[in-house]
Length: 509
Ligand SMILES: Nc1ncnc2c1ncn2[C@@H]1O[C@H](COP(=O)(O)OP(=O)(O)OP(=O)(O)O)[C@@H](O)[C@H]1O
Ligand SMILES: [Mg+2]
Image (cartoon, rainbow, N blue to C red; front, side, top):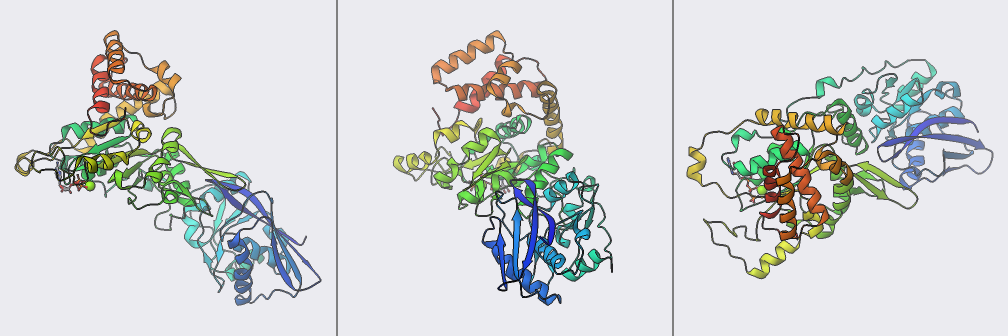
């Protein structure tokens, strides 16, 4: 073996160490890539050959073997171009092996030798730090995200020639300045409207506050123009700011998705993702030959907003069930499976019927009973069962819209949400919210007074709640008690929580 260069392979949001080894022998001039390469890695040899030639380094007419080790780790994407080129340069004795012993390399090469951005440079930087590397060498467009990780020099050569000059010591590059998290955290989400602009709709606003406080899911149903989309967009601004730890998790997902840039190297505000109803299963859940996070992971620690819920494909919606329960999504592939975090809050909106006016006092509904039934049957019971709060959003008449004063601002509501979340954190430890509690944790943390217990038993018997529904009602009641600053769950909290399950058009049981 003539050369060995360190790089990484992505497995979910984690970067695993990979070694690129190059061997050259006498024999027919041919380049072989071994070690489970996918199509893109095989293409890499053509790109690397062209990039080297256009930078003035012609491969010798030898039998060249490039091995990506360990062989059992799937390797995808174009990020191996740069480490392969560096290993070939060592084999060609342009740079010394010593120069690459304590450096980690990652990047795609254009045919002219420029470095092009690749996904996953933030996880790569975390890996490099753990391996105590001296330097991480990445494309310029990825340098800001890599420079979030302190303790290692980040170098961003523009071209292969820049890299060679750096490695030989002819023209050393200056390390990129560390990116600070602080300037990106705690900024207000300007795309999110303020709750004060929403007139009336006190019932839906109350539901939004509960959802924000306890991490619950919400379904709003109402006629067109009643303000469902507007209300949903208010949610990010009543949620507490991302903590540093949460921002790191979210930013790593966006890094792997290839969605960070020099201008936006950090995701410092809670994500609000609103995929269109034509979105595919892969777009929503993640996957593909190069497994990339889907919308459920891109909305990790934030909001996944599905507008016009029944318009989404039924099979697309069914795959939401697993991440909604577990907070993670597992994408199984031939040899291994990748796991991405997906702790999102689902907010969904829909009309009560295809024309949208069923139950609207101002407009007559045009739909037949069959049409209404068909529309509603697009949402399965198990999915609806996972949505803790169902609220109706009636239209606000225009005269009232004009006359009504502005309500509470998002900042005021957020203060109450923060206090309710602090109570939960003190009780549960960590940053687990009521919506995330398991059955036995719930039993440990929820004390119900006598009157509350009788009400819950009565309601369960009358409405035939499933065990899941029963637990979800308890979780919402726990959040209501937290918002009220109460130690134990009282009858009024349970009564309100039950009402969000039964006072709705899309019946579950
Ligand atoms: N309560 C309200 N207060 C202030 N503005 C409102 C209110 N309700 C609706 N609006 C105005 O009406 C517009 C349309 O509302 P929005 O798009 O949220 O309706 P929708 O319920 O999502 O309708 P659709 O079912 O057609 O999607 C909003 O952008 C806003 O300007
Ligand atoms: Mg809408």
